[in-house]
Length: 613
View 1 (tube, rainbow, N blue to C red):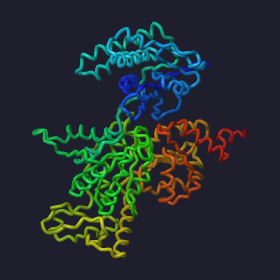
View 2 (tube, rainbow, N blue to C red):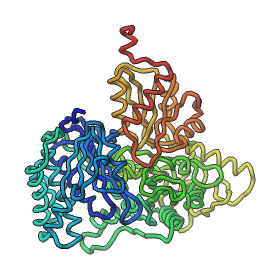
View 3 (cartoon, rainbow, N blue to C red):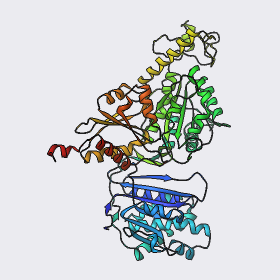
View 4 (cartoon, rainbow, N blue to C red):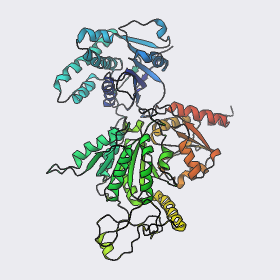
């Protein structure tokens, strides 16, 4: 088998043990390639325990700029005996297997179609370090050094990153650099050359490397949020922590150091959304961040906010469910639970960012939408976006932008005698006027209730008043389309009778899958949905194609369910393409699933049709 040869276009996967300190070393590897101007997309696939279980770190190297998972591995760094068979099986034919050869392994443990690279890492560490913990930690840096030689990664870039990582901790700097060069020197003297290579390039441009939760937290600051209430839950906790960090920098009085924000770790998720609703009712911009189990616990208060019409922003960093599910695995499986959160007839606005940049933008936008509509707004991230660093365009903000606080009556409005009914729709858009507590000493007060009421917030169980209110809420839901992001159309160069709809973190793998289909003369059009309720463009897209694939990362086709139920699209035109094993979807998976279905529809590649072959 001829070894795989590639420059700036391959996948490296590290198989480690959780708690071994490998994550920082693997990140160092990915960032060193990025510093050479070559786009990378790393993904950390880790268990929900603290120590001992398998963990993987996958690095996609792509000068073409593909940022989704490709599928398959070209170089496996196998450091975990527990997962050896699975890890070896994942390597592409002609690929490379790098492992710790301190303990000899029988020939049966290897594949004949792989290039095996053994390095006695533990033997080297045992001979160099007396402390067991140092042996483990420096083992990781040593294999990064060896890989940097094998792949021709510039050592100066790795050294620079180590210097940045241990800035202010000079005692750790020198031994890490020494371990790096121990690995490099051993590889130069003892390891065979391989045909994978990193070559310095300029394809990164001005893009930044950013984690989605961090970007969304910064978006909250720029969006005017001053209150956050949360309860720790994977994978959203880092968002609350990042918000605190950004607030300490940007929301503290420069003279006194006094905080101009409030961050509360509540006793549970129900309490956290209750605090958000209370703060928002009082005029603050407030949010909570959670994951699927937290959404389940927040249902009662979410119904209150919807019915009493109080703005609130909820960030759901989705993970695999149901129940505890797989806490550290990614999915897009909370769509329905968020869209219809609470009992009774509710419909909530959902936003679907595709990457950290849109996480930042939609985070800020969510507060405007929530205030304008006086309702909860959900921003649906997921673990793949939230906890992985991703290359994205620089974040931008227009300093001239002003917050949209919606229909709020001022003291002057009330003093002038402007007519006020808390649930009175005077503009025929379903959105009523509200007041902040204490705006006027005599006018503009109302009773905030979760029970049925009339247009002036007076309690009533009269059926006609209830129906009037519920119909107005539907009208407001329809109005929300004026304030939410529209879908993005990707039209194939030659046009197609077939289309695909997708959203969120599926985007980078979908982009590559579309290119693969185009290359094989099976082009399809695609539409990335960015919000719910669906804009008319979604209906038009489905109507203009014979068949549409709906690509999503859950078992039950939740986006497709919404398209059928809410957009009243014909179910027979929508074919689900579903990926839900907890790992991020790959371009190969999407390509294979759609290509097979096109074949079932008797669709021949355009090249064949044109030549008559």
